[in-house]
Amino acid sequence: MKAVTIHNYGSADELIYEDAENPTIQPDDVLIKVYSASINPVDWKVRSGNYPGADQRKFPVILGWDLSGVIEQLGDEVTGFAIGDEVYARPNTKRQGTYAEYVAVNFKEISPKPKSIDHIHSAAVPLAGMTAWQGLFTHGKLQAGQKVLIHAAAGGVGTYAVQLAKWKGAYVIGTASESNIDFLKDLGADEIIDYKNEDFTERLGNIDLVLDLIGGDVQLQSLEVLKPGGIFISTLAIKDEAAIAAKGLTGGRFMTQSVPEDLASLAALIDEGKLKPVIYDIMDLKDTAEAQRKVEEGHVRGKIVIKVVDEI
Image (cartoon, rainbow, N blue to C red):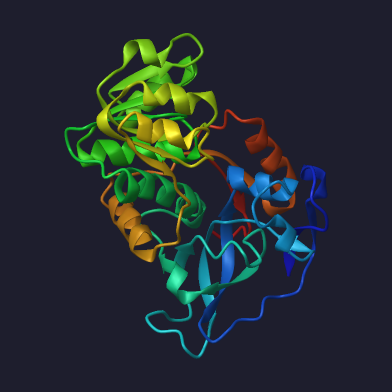
């Protein structure tokens, strides 16, 4: 099969489009023909070698943490799925990834893809969508009527978080550049703060939940706008754990888990027209290195999707 691999850690130049061995499935695996994958910031962070567990990988490594495709083979212990099923997933990140024509995935990590959208749009959902869902609901406990502040609201995770928070009935505030203000309001944001020209700490207060997708100094600043007993949730390393407790707040960093029930919930909302993937660009598998460079440079609105096969 064709795949995009790395043989060393480093820049995007390490990503090579080449022949690779077809995956071998375990009894509880399915073999999926990948129709589309997508790019996430964690992809280039792993590629750089500066990510937890990087030293435990054996080269060559296939990256990629999202897929939408079709089941071609079933392990003997697989139940609930059949050959030909259209599925999507965020597979186990310790195994070979989805920048490939085929991938072996544990059947407990997959879910039927949304029926109303194609594989390209479905591939943009799993990691970013579940990150937003788990950040807001599993860890953030967001309820209707609460105020939520979403940093980097126009990014891959942020675009889902804005829509999901609005669906839940929250008052949604996002930070973004001025060029994304109208875009985010169309997604459902009630209020947008231009982070380049405004200080959100001077404008906001009494926030119930902060979803931090930026890290750094933004974390400490965010603690100032939360109400007593508020929740601070981040996808990044926490700069000052003690500061959260010192201010009477709860929360911290979380790592997205592969939860098929969450994927099913996201698919249902998509099929009901209440949630939509935002696609920044669609690129071919052979152009994955260029796609990673774009994400690494930042300012991508939504997701970059990798098209693996043309017949979609």
